[in-house]
Length: 383
Image (cartoon, rainbow, N blue to C red; front, side, top):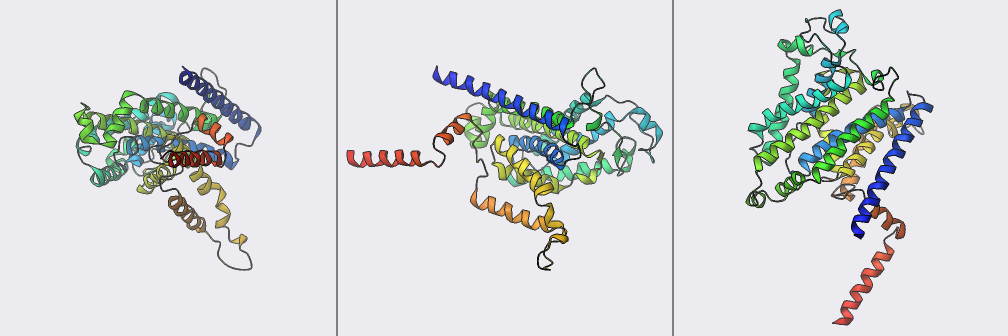
């Protein structure tokens, strides 16, 4: 009974915290300049949080080492850009200069966003049929190879009437074009990103806590034991792969909305490595860790360490600070985190109100250490 009361209380606290966060975001967007770098970090951070959580679902909770997230983000970005681009733009030849656009309609923002995830999931289902029979490093290499094939496929001239070949897609509906449903009132862009990503992450959390999520964890821990318990290994691996790709496709579409342009060259292997790095830093098997690490990664990379690239900040005439130096410092910071937090910032733990309460009652863990020492002393005396 007490446990049920605590769960209800924690759920209430979570809802209140989310409402407060969205309210603060709304006030910030109404009062601060839209060009502030803070909004850039928040939008990109929450988009990367979604793709990191989707990757964690596959790598951390199902135990499948996949490196194809950038490819599925590419599918989502292109699907959204093509389907949300106004017909007048497609006919004007301002974007499709060298091809006659084969898609003569546009679906608007939300349907295009949803289809971005669905098309990515369909590709994942087809790719998963041969690939998911592989294990460990072989699976990683195969998914990485498929991601590169997808990038080359979308730049292929024969696909030009659909993807515009290797040329840039632009003038589709970006974050500035999002409006409140049934009105022409602009929807706050940062709030929109947080709302979409928040809903998607909440669905992933519900999935992980369901019977399917328990099956995923069982496969991760021991495939032989999971199969002995009656879990269909291939079916659940395929399901995890498809769901992860669906949300990667949606994050790719949101990234396209954020960047205002889409080009296949943007979705290189380095993007997958960045996402994997976020997952490792946050903690493989922790949703909270992936979210925290995403914002820290983007804030350091896009904001906090930018001053290191400016040679005007050199001290005593030493020519140390120059373009690209922040990458060196950023790499050192990552190595320090990995050395001192071998399992990531959160490990396999999640955010909990009980943890906050315990921290407030005993911030430095002194009380817990004292109780542990007393219990040990009692055992010795008892003997």
